[in-house]
Length: 115
Image (cartoon, rainbow, N blue to C red; front, side, top):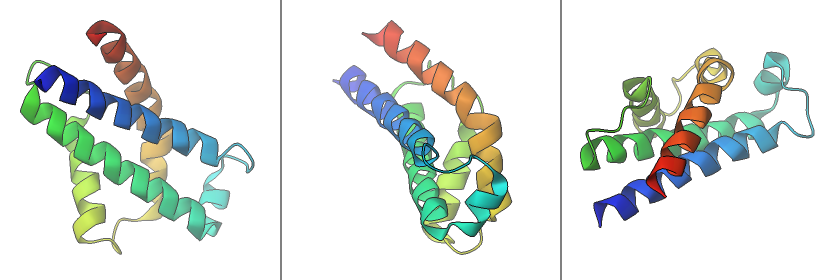
């Protein structure tokens, strides 16, 4: 049963990353666009929150799964949930640009191994 849940959480992460990528399909993927577009920032925040929660649940269900920067994703998600007005846009942008591509690759690999 836990394997099913782990797969669901991995899929949730994959969906969240894909949604973030899609948010930039009609706008330039620049920090300036991100900073000036409140709707875009809020959508990214929500998906990072989902990623953080999913990573946290995976870490509880299956300690053998290693996700790079797992603690950072969990902390960012909790930060958005509990202190929603204090996570700086540059931190969110850094996650989008510097960390999500690697997470996307890791999740795709984990999903292919789990199926």
